[in-house]
Figure 1 (tube, rainbow, N blue to C red):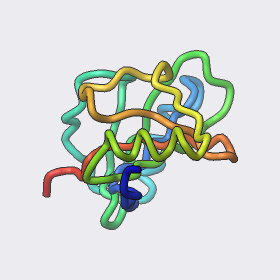
Figure 2: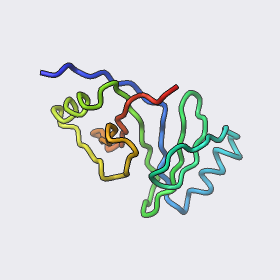
Figure 3: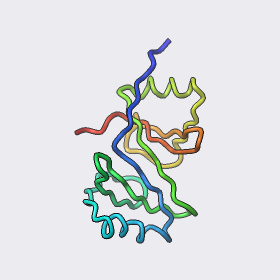
Length: 125
């Protein structure tokens, strides 16, 4: 039997926004709230603009084909293989096809309320 993995909230929050709302949404966080814009280290996935959101990073992704905005959260764990086994045993839905990742050890799941979560190792400081 495998040990139960530990999980923690990650610092990344992704707001998946339809194209018709993307520019106004980015302008709200950049111009209206004047949040500090982040450099974008991500090379895969949709066009994205990031902002410092307290201790978190808020990524606003432009996603064609969406009709409404979704929020995606990051959950971190020190052992993604153990976490994947634990989550599968608990019947958690894995949904890796929703967006490609740059890492083989990270993966996507959904909560019972259909909130997408990235399960990954903690971000480097």
